[in-house]
Image (cartoon, one colour):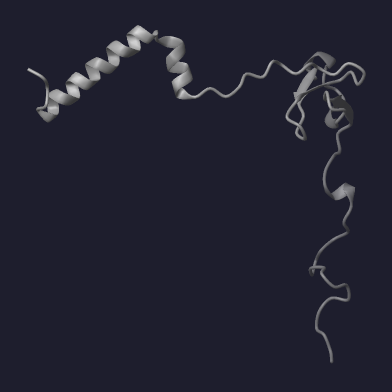
Length: 120
């Protein structure tokens, strides 16, 4: 059984040598480690010529979602997490009980007027 292809499987006809020289210039970079409150480490790479003040002090950890800082011994504190509020909770913050009763009564009057069941 004769094959009519290249001696190296998977290579294309006319493919040149593969290597770093064919892929352009590789910029120097630095690795910065960040730690969250759970001890998770995240490494971010930055160009070596980036000024230190442009490198962020904190990031969001992709593993835990917590803030992560550059100081392993003193990671950033978790901001106070507020519980999820329902729409009703937000409405109750804006309205007093009396205002709620008044609005409900007005809405019921409008509904009764549309249906023709309003008390006369």
